[in-house]
Image (cartoon, chains in turn purple, green, orange, blue):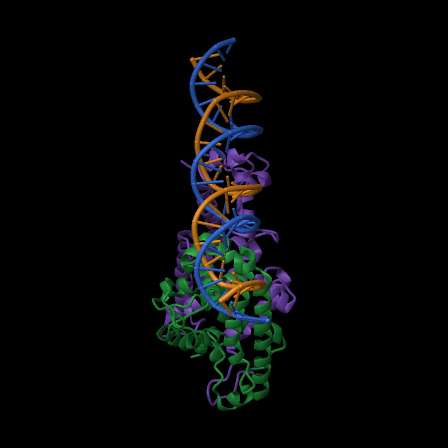
Length: 214
Length: 214
DNA sequence: CAAAATACTAAACACTTGTTCAATGCAGGG
DNA sequence: CCCTGCATTGAACAAGTGTTTAGTATTTTG
């Protein structure tokens, strides 16, 4: 069914899908026309429909392809060597960090992830559900290993940590103009992680009637 | 014949603007047609253009109106009685909390804020810039009052706290299905704030070689 | 009250949209 | 070789888009 015989680059089908991914990420599904996608891919509009049956079929294919690529990121965080990494204190567990390591600077995937999560279509919901499950698993393991503090509401804690992490990708442009560094570059991410880690390990505010952490 | 049940009787211009706000928030600017807006507002398509000159003019008007309403939320957090509130420990400073207090449950403004921030149009950028400035001001004051811990990168800390707060609104639906409570309801927010406050005051992870906070 | 201005509508217009279709080029296999 | 099956195109189509226009109510105003 997945008709392409080779998985290598640059069949017309893949070219169209990549062009659509980039354009969808930049401007949203509705704002991009089939003719624009065809021009960007260097083919005729008819060929787009020939390969994907409809514009919505193309969207579904792009969604699936993007979700696959994005899941590759997260698989690393919830991988089987997790326990070992936890023991050595190497488990950083940040989606943004994985993003910077895996994807080239100009990748359209951060922006597409934004669209996937914004438009509440099933692909984005499924993606989030998988990532949330992974986050909960990692946190449970961390608590058991003594690296993370226990909480009586692990669902909220996992959601909070995941969501705060995703916010870096969702609000990437705004963060960039606010702090002067793109948090999805090695430099920007290092600066970001530094202060965020401080909050996550020691807090940022004083509990009522107490001193704030140094 | 106003099809929208409303608290106050409105001029047609306001009715159209509100209908557009709701539809834009739900489905995005590009996916909504002038005819749909007109039908939702109970007027003819021509009248929409008569009042707002073009669909994009309507979008600008809706953006301005939404930004004004949304700023009202944030003004409360950065108000002039901030110092006084800080002294009494009443400054909670969460955008989500302000949202729940100010807007009715079915308000389209959270969803519209999402669109404002994620489609990087100038209105959303300006909104974020204003909110970021307020956040930095509040944090500076908190540090000076001894409520917040000092940091050598206040720009990142302010951005992180603001962005993590906004994430609750941006990923509201996903959070709701993940934890089983809508964080923009009083019940859900209370549950959310409880654990998040724990992280912000004591951290969640162990510093290298140390014990995690209890 | 008459006149001017505005609120509003119905119909049409020009254009773009996604999609279809017949025709062409081109591979490989019998 | 012809033939069958794809990939690919250019032109066309029906539907839907934002917008315009001409005309009618309705309100405001001098």
